[in-house]
Image 1 (tube, helix red, strand yellow):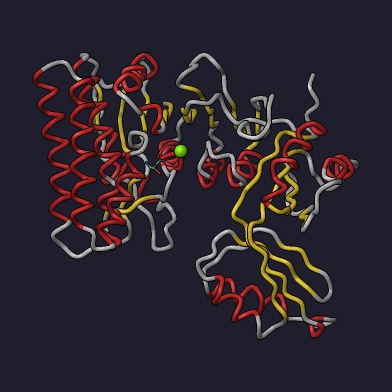
Image 2 (cartoon, rainbow, N blue to C red; image 1 turned 30 degrees about the vertical axis):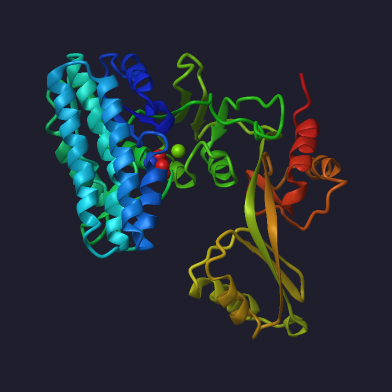
Length: 439
Ligand code: ASP
Ligand code: MG
């Protein structure tokens, strides 16, 4: 069995919905995990924000517009009266639900219920479309099996047991449809796996069912060796290891949710990134056996903040690191990069929510400087400890750019370099010329 996950653009219009049929209707058993139609989750988040700001009328207007758009989609998608009517009823049911929430107090829980509508509607529409075409499919509600624990992590035991029970209902259907992104939390409430979480749903489901392969379908043919928005002549990377793919997903390659590699890696299930617009393209294959190459890719992550903590008391002292880390732990803020000298420590974070509190806490340890608008450039390749010669090429490419921090040796798969965001495009281009010369 394979898992096929389709992102928002792959179900972005009635034509795109229809284009999925030949891809999934090949007589082989598969679980199809869907995102919401492109743009829907953003609109639902906006609606929730208006609701939370007390602007209920504006929230209601936006909800009405989205409802109308879905009715149009249903009209174009389904030609029979029976399935058309079912789709219109379903759409009304979901939008009536959102509207009734507006008469209550805003809460984070209501927000989660609102943003879940996108996936609930897209999966039902695909199910109706297939039914109209006479293709049997089974719609399995993700809320019946997908669950996170108190730390927001997938509860694998629960998921495995419950998805197996749901799959027992499969008769002759080869296409099992379910929602990406949405889940229940420990209280049994509707929740989600955070933005872009449908990829994560797909790999969690793949791991729970011991799938043979997990395919993530988007509208680009796999991961590129540099950012095509800034660099010309980028190439698709055909093979990546789980470790390499995880680094790339984390450092800005928007095509894959950063957490989504983990479940596949745990069960050693290949992940293939495919393009709905070019289905015959083999895309990128992510496995445990992908061979090392000197350099595979370069990616950049913006919105990084660096904190430098300097204290002469650190000289020959112990316990400083613990105190520094505790400040970040207390404010639930993950650290990305870190470098140290005898009397100073530099750290980066990408979540500024508790920056002021963290700085205040660290000020009791030493002098703290903060720099915003930083980017981490991540070079993915072969950085195993006994390898020689990769650093000069990277730094030669960057010799015109102020390098603020370097992290080498933390990972066998990557080197991270901190620069000003204003230098990012030049850095990406120059690294591309040096590390991936045109053939
Ligand atoms: N629809 C959700 C989002 O836009 C989940 C996903 O597409 O992966 O974030
Ligand atoms: Mg996505």
